[in-house]
Length: 413
Ligand SMILES: *Cc1c(COP(=O)(O)O)cnc(C)c1O
Image (spheres, rainbow, N blue to C red):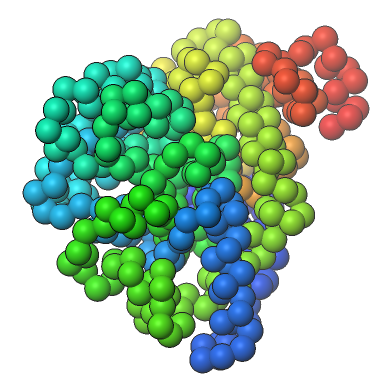
């Protein structure tokens, strides 16, 4: 009989769990959109989004999801016939490439497979070969949410510079903003795309593009009045920030989420918390993998996302495990994604993004372990203890879970 009677836990990579305070802030009557609080608050939201992105550049808010952000960035950077080089490290690069292709952009995809980050040397070589500088933009994800590979964004910038190439660098941080460390200006990123429903803990409905002076100088005549950066960045009237009615309640929710990140926790601490949780999940997966087929999709620790972890299983076990966790325990795990060469039923994903603390994360891992045992899926024992040790090591530059401190760690947690 199911034990799923309690608060459901979603460990899916978006939408992430929404803090009650964010929901509470949205529970209000329609605000005045002409003057007063909403107008003033919107300014602070724009400023704080730039702080989360670590940029002095500008931000545009769109009513939309991550796909809207992709399209908005493309519509301002590239015209039909312009060439873009898209770096794929899983699934989402292909998605962005497909959007670009359908907008008439000449797309070249460099595929680095499903189990590794991009190789900057290959990108540098490709750009060196582009003697006529036909490539106007290089597009890449920071974290690919399907593979959980994290690209080294600074290394991508260095590759472009080493090739002496003028292309814009555009990064998709939909999964990773406020999870994986990201420094737009310091890392030389020209355009960044994000959305509100992952690390920013707000219900789906807002997409963001961030753009620096170089991106604005290179911007094309945008064929779409809705995507056009111009009035959104320099509005003559408030409504132009949104090309129409503001996403009023989402703004109130996001205001609270930004306070939680920037004021209460501090962005550095938010990044460190996510890094620790990613280590905890990796430690658990490593222990499970001691017997049977479970395995981390990304082998190199430095190439693993702090926002989500993809775990491979024996044939069909990922789907069975997800069903068990959902029906018997009220835990929703991320599904394996349908990518050529990959079986979505033979993987699952654990999201560790946004509003998350040790009881929820360790409970999630323990519940997975119960599911593995209940289904008779072979696995190594003791994963929860491995994860606990990673949590104890929080704030220390530990790389591997320290099992010797286990007895103490249990008490501390
Ligand atoms: C979720 C996600 C998207 C797409 O966002 P939607 O809101 O589903 O349109 C794009 N890129 C990455 C890396 C994502 O994680």
